[in-house]
Image (cartoon, helix red, strand yellow):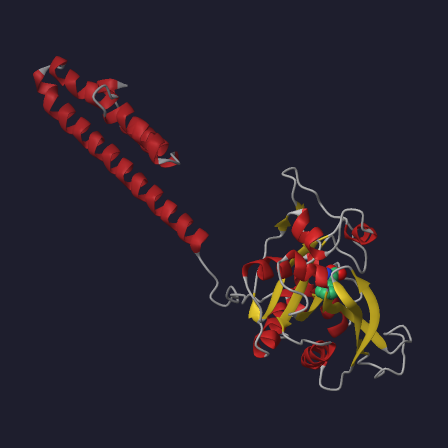
Length: 345
Ligand code: PHE
């Protein structure tokens, strides 16, 4: 090509430039023709070799070619940049008629809601909030609660034993001991928290569940105080029309012990399917603190008396909201969780 380059050659080069798709390729082409070793540059250097009379025309011609090629490169560069800009804009183009991203408002899980509800009830009656660890020693979970190693009731409280010799508490009654060890009566505390048992999940059991423990110790505390407290609790939780019933039961750490029932809200204790025909639904265990429990924390059982109760939160929720399967509470199905958005609080 070189110095005898023709208009057609230039046109071919320009056509080639127009087919280039990227700025990099364009740059390559540009140096191929216009760079230091580029064809046109080399051609222009060779003008010297041409006879003087032809130099002027040739020089003018080559300069013109150079200009046209430069222009073609610039035009193509601008076209590519514009194309890229349009592509980007198209990618970011948004539809103003599209519904906006809804910001969802979170909600407390129903267990947390009911836990807070129970908390308000006990705070309202003058009980203080107390907390204890979920990882416990056997002493706090059993022995201090008048439940020695050989005690048959331990069978119902099988739990997860940890490699450090501790266990996961099977009930919140551990907090009774922890509080009494540190303080002198009178005291009135409640303590919500997680508990664990070696249970296989089914419609009424979970290996991890929530309880609320309540303990009141003072001079001359009687079953009447327990009943009064239970009545307020049941009416606040389930409704003013609900009644409670105590039935003798057994716990190693209370004497006497009771199973506490609340009247069925559907049949008002005449008996229906929901309450299994009995008219009553069991909600918790309770009793008067056993003298041995007082002894284990250094209280004189002749001087002090007290009541304690332990209530399963999931059980309360199931009764309150006619929940048939306790596992729903742990399944983390958002449809279920949303059902209870702001139900209590
Ligand atoms: N800790 C008992 C349980 O989990 C419940 C209970 C608490 C009973 C306090 C009496 C007094 O079964």
